[in-house]
Amino acid sequence: MNRFFTVVLMATMAAGCAASTPATSTSSGAATSSGGGAAATVQLDVHNTSSSEICYLYISPVSDTQWGPDLLGSRTLSPGETDHYNMTVGSWDFKAEDCQHHELFQMRNQTVAENSVLTLHD
Picture 1 (spheres, one colour):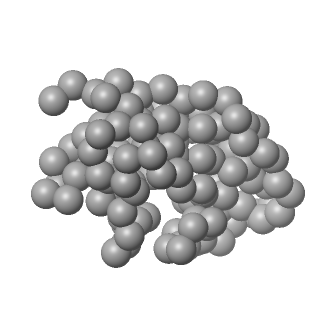
Picture 2: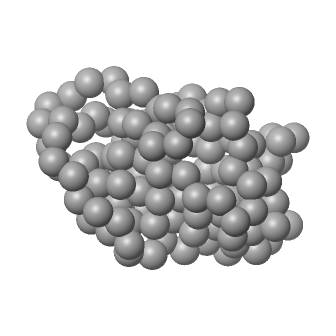
């Protein structure tokens, strides 16, 4: 299954403490912060415009050699839904899987900065 993914600029800058992993999800589930020094954070919007339900979402710094924990937990990201994450500005890797753990997409070394949106589509 071929899928296309784009990163579009569209989120807001927020001041505060940042971590080397996604800091928080602003939806019902939460990604956890591992602590870190003071740095600018931005909101990354992950928008599912594909026809597939996303059951597993992984966001890791490019410096990590393995994927971190699933950020969705018991939630899913249905077609048409958007999830929001407060993240440190920098370079990140993204991966999404369906409910059977089939990879829907993977993007590496993507810059997250002010106004970032990750759009997943067929």
